[in-house]
Structures are given as C-alpha cells and as structure tokens.
Image (cartoon, rainbow, N blue to C red; front, side, top):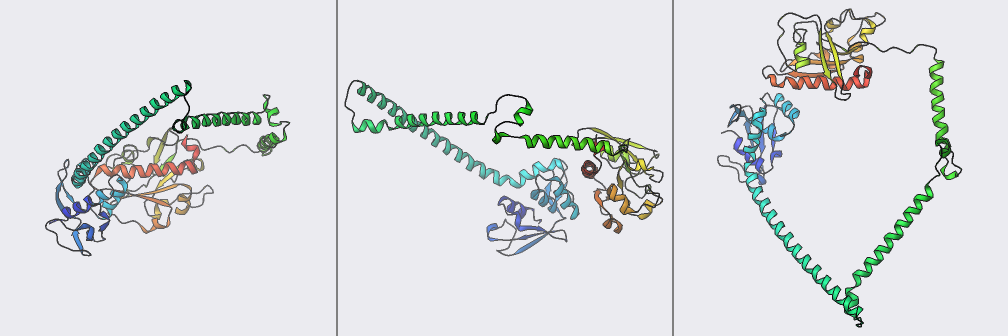
Length: 412
C-alpha cells in the first residue's frame, strides 16, 4: 500500500509539517497524537516514524494526463499549491515528475474533499446564525428608536403647553443637550482650522517674490539660491571639460553563445530557445546570425538582440554592445578573445563586464570552472518541453535586471 491515504489524512488535518522528503527520495512521516487515529491499513502510535518510497506510483491517476502520480509529486504539490518554481525545483531534486497543470485542480480537490464538506456545513450554520442575530438586533433598534421619538414628541408638546418639567423629562432630553454641545464644538473647530490656514497663506505674487517673502518665518531664499547654484555648476562642468562627450555604443545588444556542438544552445537552436521558449536539437543548416525581438518589462520597449557564436573578431565598439555570454564551462571557449588593449581576455574579465549564464540538460554534471565564475544557472528537462519556458524566463528576467543596472542605454 502506498502512503497516499495517510498523506491525504494528514493534509485534511493540516499536519503536512509532519512529512519530510529525505535525500534517499523517500517520504518520512512522523506520527503524533494529533494524527491519531490513522486510516485503515496503517499502524503506529505517537512518536513512530513511517517511511514510503517517494518515487513509487500511487493509486491516484491524473484526470487529464491519465498517469499514476508519484507520492513525492503529490506531496510537493500539496506543499506548494500555488508556487510553480519551488514545486518544480523540489521535484527535480528528488527525480520525480511534477504534477501536470491540467491535473492540479482535480488533485487538490481530491486531497481536500473532507475539509470542504465539513467546513461548508460550519460556514452555512454560522452564516444563518449571524443573519438571524442581525435581524433581531435591527428589530430591537427600530423599536427602541420609535419609542424614543414618540416619547420625545409628547414631552415637547407638554412643555410648549406650559406643563411643569419633571425629572423624567430632563433625563429624556439629555441627548438633545449633547447634540447641541457637539454642534458648537464642531463650529469652533472649523473656525480655528480656517484661521490657521489663513495665517499660513502668503500674498499672491511671482515665484521669486514668494520665495523671498518679507516674513522671516516664510523665507525660502536658501532653497532658491541652492537651485541656482546647482544650475550654474552644471553649466560650468559641461563647458570646462573641453572634451567631446563619450558616445554610447550604437547598434543592437549582442548575446554570445558557444561555438561548439557539445553546447546545449548553439546557432542551430538559438532562435527557437531565445525567441520561442522551446529547446530543439542541434540539427539543420547553421545560420550566420540570429536576431530576436524582446519586449522589456520595465521600459515596455521592444529591443532587438543579435546572437553570435564568434567573439574573436569583435571590435572594441562592438564589445560595448555585448550584454550576455552563454558559458560552456571550458576555458578554451575564450581562446583568442581580446580586450580593448588587445591583451588576452580571461573568463573573469568576460563575466565582470557581461551577464554570464550557463544552460545544461537535467542530470548533467556542472563543470568545476563555473563555480569560480560569475555565472547564473538554468536546467532544461530532457523530455518535457513544457518546462522549457522556465529556463527561458530565468534567462530573460535576470538579463533584463542586469541591463537596467549596467547597460541602461541598451534598454531604450
């Protein structure tokens, strides 16, 4: 028997914290008094620990996919019901397949159906009770208000006709006295506020006259002098430099990818990945250049990117346009790359001036060199093409954030 019934039992009681995924890809469940009694077929008392094979298929099959879901896949979906990336990372770390998007809603409903049935009854009973209580309170208030109004009218008529005021009449008209007092206070407060506003107003005049008011308490000449000094300093700095302003690099941003068939991303599949968020094999004719248009999130501008795999012939001005380098993990990738002074370019130099990114297939070892370079990582699933968009989004989101800080002129 799989651990699915026990997992469902703990989820219905809000006890998922008693579950833990181990490094051996097992689901370990610690039984506590709150979880007792256990479902039929499971034995254990307070303090016992039960373990189940997390990669084993359970008896539950996806509604849309028709596949038998693995135990750890269901556990991670319950643990992160609305978070896609943490769920995907957890499933990838334990070598289980994440729950398909079409199966999530039915799975969560299946695992929580007991909670819904009981909670809906409680909520309905609470709503009915609250509604009846509100109706009773409204009836009591209206009856009290009608009695107060009729009694007040009767007493006022007696007073107008010359009837002697009794102690009962004075107590019933206390609320009228409080209303009159509140009205007087409100009028006084309004008058005070209006007078304060008038006291702080300055006569209508030019901006310079207002800032140089004769009233010393309202003199803002210091702010005016500061603004004028800033403007004059800006003019002096622009005229005294004597050197022409440094021109920004013209042309589209450049992304450099490895020139090797062992790389996951090459010129053969670069357009499919960067533009269409789809990973394809390295087949077909190799294009000389690849271009893709990306709409940046912050600037809302469409920016065209140029993708190349040969950085040896780049001029210094073209190097100013390089925004990202896709790493292969081998130092020979940077052979014959030159700095502006024509000295050999080292990997540390490359990734200190560009956004470094490394893409690998899931399960492939990571080269040791990458651990010492400033490079971000992403993995591509070998079989599920629907997960290609995760690596695609990681690259573009982090590249855009890097460009807005280090290459803002390229974002417009």
